[in-house]
Image 1 (tube, one colour):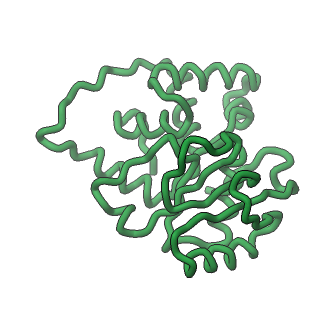
Image 2 (cartoon, one colour):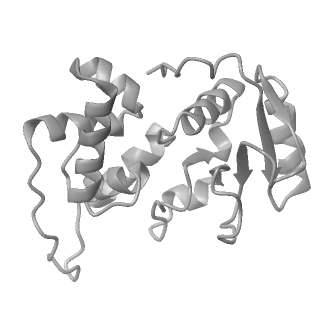
Length: 206
């Protein structure tokens, strides 16, 4: 699905920094990013809008900086990998193209979840087969019909404004619905809410 971006994000300059351990990977990402319109490469990770990294960062960074975690194939398919609310989105190294980077960057700038379909399917596959020794203690989550629709739209990466348009309500009403969903799922942000919903099989992310 081609995302629809909020007004202004198509023309605003976005400062992107890269923090990866491999110089070869660094150079490759820089080459691809130079093909993305309205993106300015910067070496200042504290002054950028979006940071692409291969590792978790200390919690001292500017909260206004959106973080994309770059994964390799082994991490995507490894059983120990889980999504974290510490990151605003994810990229798969082997799948990166200029369009892929552009979409992910604009999604996180818009406050949306950027997660590759392949990664979402991998996590759903794991969630569909719980291990025998895993405790079955997740409390039931009761969502209204409108909240359930809102959750599905969150999983599709829609912003509050886009949710409001889809549901034909005010943006303030959409914000209240999103806040209610996050509260019921005991999630601090949209990313965590979608992760919780996937694990609880409240939504099907295809």
